[in-house]
Length: 114
Length: 116
Image: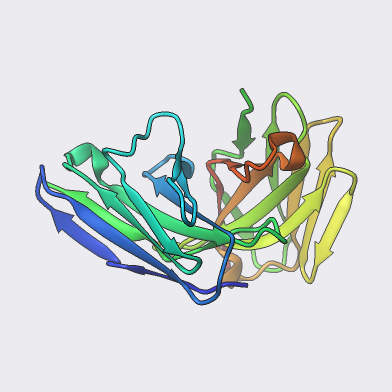
């Protein structure tokens, strides 16, 4: 199993600003994912972070709003750009190796936009 | 599109009893079905995976069943303890049917409270 850390654990941001969330995995992994979890809703996949290429975004999420980097096999960042109160949520990073099917999650970043 | 449903109401049981959680899905059966536990303020933690050709899977006090005819998975915790109190998430994994896409389809989760 992989151990995943995220920074920051929480933040309160003003409307119109941007926040970059970091995700660090303790071992090399093939795939990394970014999710959003809002109260009363299921986990929603934002994008798959691909090492060495652009992220693959899900319907309803665009690169301009949620730019993602994946410079190597253990690290990824998600930026929430030009934030509005609707972006208030928990953002989760997960990782998976191609030899397995289960995902390992970070503790999440609780974002509040005022 | 594929939909997944879990018990929407919280489940309250007495310590020592067996907790049974339900996961139902529509349309085509997934290649795999996964169960996760999530505690407040934490990320989900993987518990068990069951394949479409498996009827049952066990791990310590946990048991998962998978009925592709009923399009349902049941998750059992035997001899439940207060420490088992958490939200349990079901996720569909379409496997090779989704090509290289490893995306999971997540349920809303069922909250379980085990009372001492």
